[in-house]
Amino acid sequence: MVFSNINDYYAIGEKIYIISGIIIASLVSYRMIYLIIGIFFTRKFKEAKKKHKYAILIAARNEEKVIGNLLSSINKQDYPKDNITVFVVADNCNDNTAKISRNNGAICYERFNDKDKTKGFALQFLLNKIEEDYGRLSFEGYFIFDADNLLNKDYISKMNDAFDSGEKIITSYRNTKNFDENWIASNYALHWLRSIRNDHRARSVLRLATNIQGTGFLFASEIVKDGWKFTSLTEDRALSADSVVKGYSITYNDEAEFFDEQPTNLRIALRQRLRWSKGHLLAYVETAPSLIKNIIFGRKYIVNKTPVINNKFLESIRHRFASFDMLMHQTPFLVFNLFFWLFFSALLYVIYSYSNGVSNTSLVFETSLIGRLLTNIFKDIYFNFAPGIEAMFASLIIVLILRLLFRIETYLLSFIMPIYIFIIERKRIKKITFIKKIKYILTWPIFDLIGIYTSYIALFVKVTWKPIPHTSEVTIEDIYLSKK
Image (tube, rainbow, N blue to C red; front, side, top):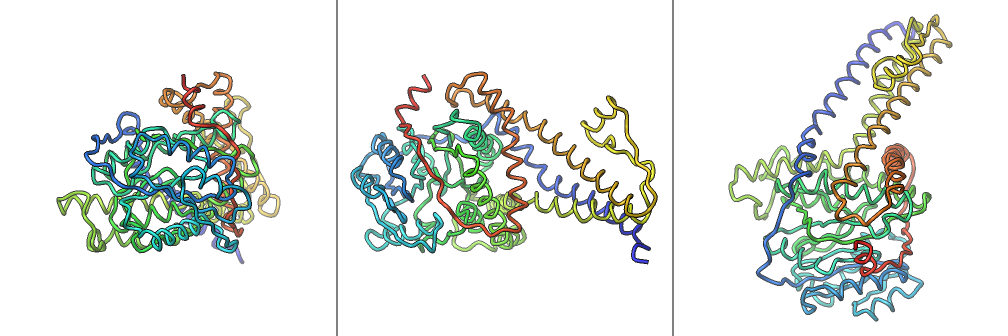
């Protein structure tokens, strides 16, 4: 009989599912320390003794509505103008992006290649042009910005403080210029602030490597002395992991603040989130082997890299843990959790029920807060079915209801995060009405739910890079006024 040993299989499957959950929770439990550190501490940098020479890289595709405002905010920096050179790649543009860039003092190269579409390919082209005309090492460091960004007037000065301290890769405080445009934009804005509090601040204090997030970061020219090789859907993840593999730390500067525009259209947001999810999966496949090697071999795997910590033993520990931390960041735990639940819990339980029937089985169980609440209000509901098709379908209903209750509970608990962000970042978020804050808190869990399900969809679909339209004409002066 096909199901003669199903009892044993089901028992083993349940154990595998429980153990896998415990292992995953244990692997990331250290991040609770990050949450605590992020509340109270961030790394500070002394004022720089030297004004370093930088290039600013901007990849722009049909960004005529916003790029002028970015370049204006760059031109108004309190940093010496002779030490800043702005390069723009007008990537497959059919508007006035190139003209506006040149009119605002930028050196603009035009690229026409509709086959290699990602932002990474545009940056690769731009850095190759810089090598031809100037030499990549003629600049000490490179900033990367998206065309919709705006910079605080002291942004480059603050980043120079961190660079002058010896840091090679630095990310910064990402604020939002259209925070209160609608609930979609606010979800993105809260997400970036969550990353700052939950990840960047603690990692900078502990001298680990935080993750680059697309824009608003600076790296030493030595990183790209051989060119730019990060051309995937999510070039920022690839750069982050590759840097850790080579022994670099990635720090965060809380005093360097910039603003960017968030999507306001749900269709555009879904498309972007799907690209992120697909890029996450690809980055894991590409970088996990090297990160694992670093965890095992430590400094023996690093070639020609100045240590972050002079003590060899401590540097080895720092580097191994930074590699482990980055591996945890790159690992698609949502996908692994779904796999374990689907095959070792749900599927085996349905087959088990077909063979053994459903006997006095609770509809909701008391395994969650929602389940216990429903039990107290409505009393519990029990199923009893003889072995066969009816028992199989009944067990399937139970499994799906339990999963739904788990999602509802996760949704309710996630309200804590936006409340925390609104309180702790109140001095840096633009003034928003109380009613809007309530609206954004209530819609916030949708952001994470979208991320969960796009991670699942990304397993089965081919994703291509498409530009995100930017239309906000907000200037840096408008932002200053909104904070008064």
